[in-house]
Length: 186
Image (tube, rainbow, N blue to C red; front, side, top):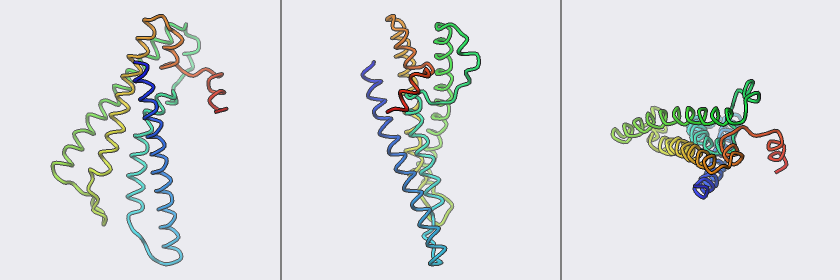
């Protein structure tokens, strides 16, 4: 299980870098569009559409990385006051709810992509982009997010059952201040 978690974490790291490249590429495209409009009175067209697709795909590809890095937003006002075993249960419930929500989104997105493919849907812009092109990698990001959430849930429970409470908390718990400081050094 730990090997699968490490491999998934590595994959998510590569995909977050790919998402970053998409964002930088779209920023360069929009910048070129702005300069061409200003100085040459010419438009390459579609920069806004392409950057929207890039943003959606990059965001979905980053979800699983944020999950591994425990970077999703949490409200921790009462959390730090709870005993560690109760914190672990709260972490599991929170991760299960987040994963369940992502599963609903992925299921709905699956249906949308299937419909897009069945009908050959295209954007209603001058580019007439086949919508499956941005939707499929976007869907892959959501599916990976759900799969990683399930892996982390199962991995945390398995570690806890083996008596490794700290290791289980390292998978699904909040980062300690020391862990956050250490992450900043890297």
